[in-house]
Length: 167
Image: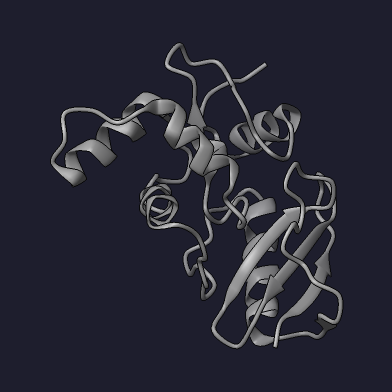
């Protein structure tokens, strides 16, 4: 059974989705791929993982680094999962470029290179925003590029974390 919950934030409302295994979706209400897999019949229910996620978000939006990540139930292709697991290792307040992320994937796979565009495609399909921090990935020149929640939110999140001054 799949469940949903809602959570307000300083930069917009979220829809949370999950099951007994863990959180599998955290979307801004109007994000690009907003809840594309939600089917009718999902039940609104306050699962323990939703309470953990709301507490995590409360700490995060207060400007502090949350320590304990809620239990996640990542769902995606093997490549997407590989990218998202690296995202989880990007420290709070730090950024990485698409090219650097592609290089990390290439090294993991033992290949000469990986396409930064392929990495960007996997980032765009990240279903657990903020916690799986795709907002910490920026262009090679330090510019903000692509974010399902919009560049204004990406800028706000990075500034909250002290990752630099993004105007």
